[in-house]
Length: 50
Image (cartoon, rainbow, N blue to C red; front, side):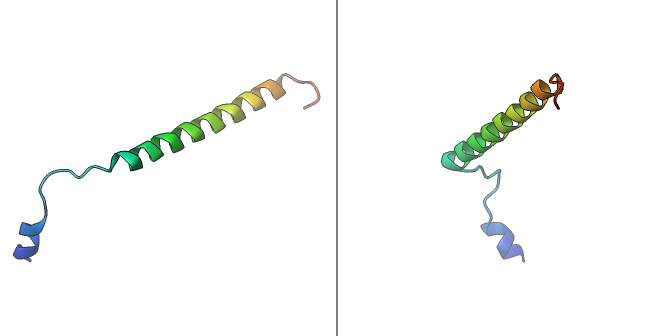
């Protein structure tokens, strides 16, 4: 078990740039979809035919 611990690299491991970019784009798309949904509901609440 001690030999396994010596082969691990110390310190944090970070994701590649492409993976981080995909995550940012996914977060942005989800935020825009949520914002669009909230604005749609908010505009329909003021409508009397809801």
